[in-house]
Figure 1 (tube, rainbow over the protein chains, first blue to last red):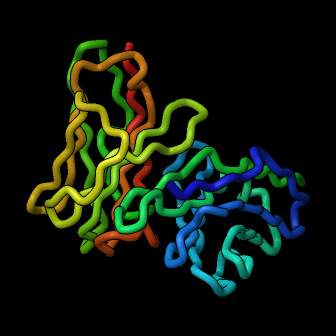
Figure 2 (figure 1 turned 135 degrees about the vertical axis):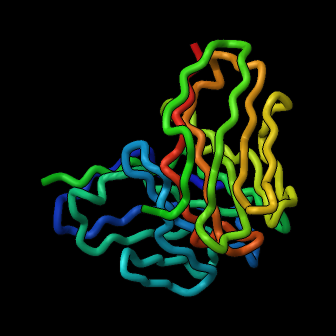
Length: 111
Length: 114
């Protein structure tokens, strides 16, 4: 089964870029990497997803290594409201609809 | 506001009881996912429905069951409740049938079993 590994926690100064890494070395060739975040105990919020190329949207950028074994979510100018748990997600079994969130990275943005 | 509505927001019940959690997906979304989040745990995938049919099953206990109705709302039934079932239960919906891409989550139902 595909799995992801993320640091348990990270701190980032307000206004600076937050770089959140994720290891997904067992990801299958055609599987996407998805990122969600959860602020306090609210419902998780979709951020971005990607397959091979780097992706950018209004919330973040996603950098995927060429071998696709890892990726980095970048919040270019972190604010206090970005304090949350960030989940890197891959599909557990290709061809199914099972997605595992894992325990994520707890990002704390410091004033 | 994600557009996904979950009711009730809070639920307190005794062990051995049965409860029903309700989820109304965003307008037009055909897929509904259910997740369980225990204290300080990640989200555990329970089950997914697409247009009324079960699409995928996760680590859902036999005491739990779910269904999606013709109007696309979904219900998660939890029976013979145990203390360990206390958790946040999230529902998510997406337009697509399979991928969790751009799934929208509700605010959850906090279940406390006493």
